[in-house]
Length: 242
Image (tube, rainbow, N blue to C red):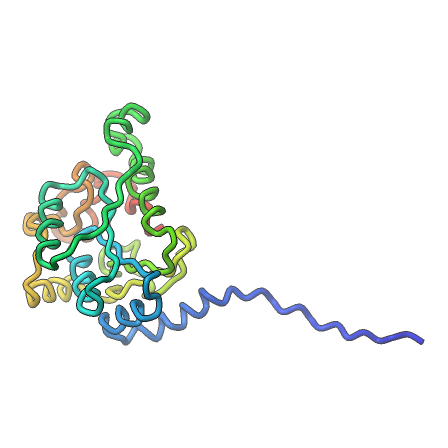
């Protein structure tokens, strides 16, 4: 006598985390940035870290987070190529909040990089320079973390227009949270002035987006906020957000 076997169809593989994050992200489209930040801090706890490059969006982000949890982890990638004004701003913000922020630096000094890669690597191979001085330190900053809060906004550049509030970042293996994704440049500055927060004086000199000194120039009228970054090249991102 033969035995009948019932074969159940195999369930399709479902990558549930990105789907779940997409649903939560969509729900957050109508939420206040503070509510998104609070959710992230409460959800990820000690696994959460906030990255900043000390632009005005990053300062707003820090202020929102520190009002919820004064001990929230905050880091930055010091490429050794910041403007002097940026280093002064870091000191001013640390004095303002009465705490320090964690700096991650490249494994190569500028001198060692020049010996290995040639002088002014940022001029002849900016992608390699960003890999050494930004992406590799970022991997250390996010090691052991589950969530990374970032100051990305959709109005900063055409390449960021579709930035979700939440997404799984496979490059670094963390949930990426952008509470300010749908804020405007006007909203950010209004918050800075309302709260009396320090900011980089270069913003008043035509630099809406400030990165490394050799690769940042003032922006012309009508240009994207990030048009001064790697101006004259096809490069638009350092690699952290790709």
